[in-house]
Length: 182
Image (cartoon, rainbow, N blue to C red; front, side, top):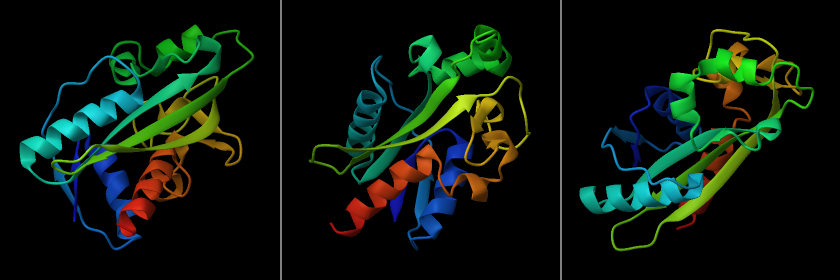
């Protein structure tokens, strides 16, 4: 049993679908924790350490972000805030007329058990920012994140399709492989 600390129900659904492939049960707790201004890694470490000590059990937290090359990595660690304020249309407007639309979704899993130091696991997926929103599946930036190998945006992929290669799948798989040998 792994305890996943998040307030994002979409992340829980994706994680549950990934964990079931490894026959690991996931417990979800929406604990809330202070996120320091910093990297995804710093947020994941801080959240995992806080939650494991507060609950006195091993936990994972996940922080993710969209990093757009032409915008010097923006929105990055501010992805959630930017999604709420600018939204997909705001990002598309910022990239209007920009040819280099390279982007990465990154996910960092932070794991911590009481009285131990946190461990982190980075996963990413490479894509491009589409010129318009496509698809109504997924959440947040999914309809504008185009994956050339798939020929679709994340917004056009089902959770099952997305979980075959997503940034969250990659970070969770790294964690699961490490966790399985502990």
